[in-house]
Image (cartoon, rainbow, N blue to C red; front, side, top):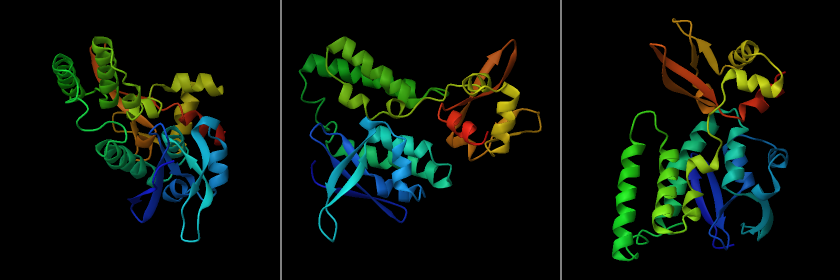
Length: 251
């Protein structure tokens, strides 16, 4: 692991180290403190083996062997927290921490494109411009747009882009893709029962048009996507697959 770096989230310091493959590993205790998860060992016990590890972390009392989690593990911890801190922490990581890592060259230096041969550089810049424009289209997820852009870059230039792909939100967390019927199929409930359970957990409510609408807490678990069908336009709520675990817990 490389030099320890500390980021500040609200009143919490979140320490991070980079491994030999330039992958960031976050101190699990710091992440759990930021998410108000009091029992770190229980929180990380449900993570996959490739999402967690151990590392020697410098402390005022000397080096200590501490649990660390990679980006995938970090986002799974976020999904496992229903605290309001979780949504703020997720936004902080994706809007401040990861961009800061990229800016310092941990994943890709600012001069990486400029160092390419001129024809390849022009081709990459052109594809990036198209990807940035698509990402701004209403209803298009920026992470998905840029993941597709990286695929096109690879197909057109042969450049290896996997290290860049790993920092995209779409690659680090499951995409909101399940409707209540699909959630019900996973946990043995009807769509109506799933909707009622989501409502009882404070994740959605019926609005004045008798349509389901996300609460502020629900927005951390789902997205309301516009649709048009048979002349009717509205919003369809699609849920993160992680919500199925929450539904099982309250069964």
